Image 1: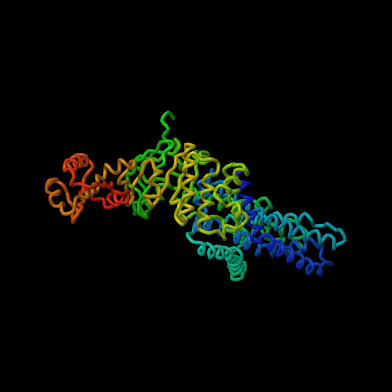
Image 2 (image 1 turned 60 degrees about the horizontal axis):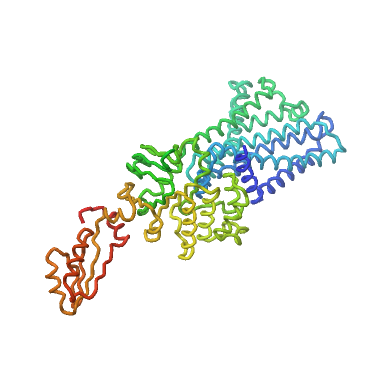
Length: 275
Length: 308
């Protein structure tokens, strides 16, 4: 455990040193604030609090940003150390390869955690202050923060998988961008395209919901937009999840699967790798 | 273990794809030895070290280091007793020298006081606050040595430790290694430069294209190579031909001029030859015997034709 901390703290320090953390906090915080200011306009007839509205806009934003940040943090971490030659030395120290992966993972998740806490958390405090101390809808906001962390962790694990499979850093960078495009843009585009063409003929609501579960980003979106009533009504998406019988447990389990499978695969591939 | 064997390799072979990098190599190293691996680039020295460090697994054969297979999980704990300086060592460039060393020290559970001592020892005390990216080749190499010495290892692997160091730094470097040896540390050093390590090595392993072509102490290598010594005899001017005749046809004369002749002489013939020369009397003014040089021995093994 102590060794894991040593490895994790190194990654965290690297994040602080190259201003990664600072930049991400600023980005997330600023966007959260801007969106919450813009979002406060339509309140009135709809039964939704300011925080509920900001959850919708922030969740839609996080779906793009968090995977991007996580992939940029992680794609280089193994292939980079192989290429520069630092991995050779590291593995002659009394650490197992599993510890190297887990330690790095902890460090990178901490970077995302700090960014989310400071960025979204800071924005939350400001919003509460602006709304005269009203904390209505904080649960949904908290869920949004926690699931954003999980989304980040998933894409860190996917980044590691890319990092351990490819031979060169440039390939890793390209593959990471590819992953991002597929999960954040292309898959949804395909899904909606199919839905439009289909006009509800063959693709039932059930199947559509199942297809959405295939992508971790869609799962994240459904989770945030459907669990709390205030949010789902404001988002007008209530039907999708409940109609398909998707509980929040199922959604979270799917996300956890998306985390565990790439991470263990990475560890297994790394285990076999010869230097 | 009763015998203090630290490393043992049993007919180890390593292939990368179709390429055989190490073939059928057996070697055992006792505690306190300083074994020097010599060979050209690509002779398999680095791979051999990686095998002993557990970074790669042998295609066939058995590797044991400190009484365990270094590639197994169980060997992780015993890595505390190892120190490794890779060839052209790489560090985390954005960190300062002190941060790098502290990071490695923590992984080995070594106290910070030792980190500072090592920084002073390798002469990086003043540069410890600078980022590694600004370090010269020599400074990196010194930082590499410092990390290898963390936790007072019992077994050191040094892969071409002095490349990129200027002569005075080399001296310092070998003094450090000598000091470690006094403490009974076992070490394995790979090198191109034979002369430099000559005085330190208890044994040489000469490698060529993945095969061990010779292994032994300096004396053993000389004996194996059986290279002749050069004997140079100075005589009264004009007497060289007569002297040559009197020494007989058995001697192998390399050079003959007005007042000196030099001849090749194998180890066994040396004493009889000297006795015969001394019988020649006043004619002989001086004798010089030059034993074969180490690089000649090296060249002999690298050529690999034992017929010469």
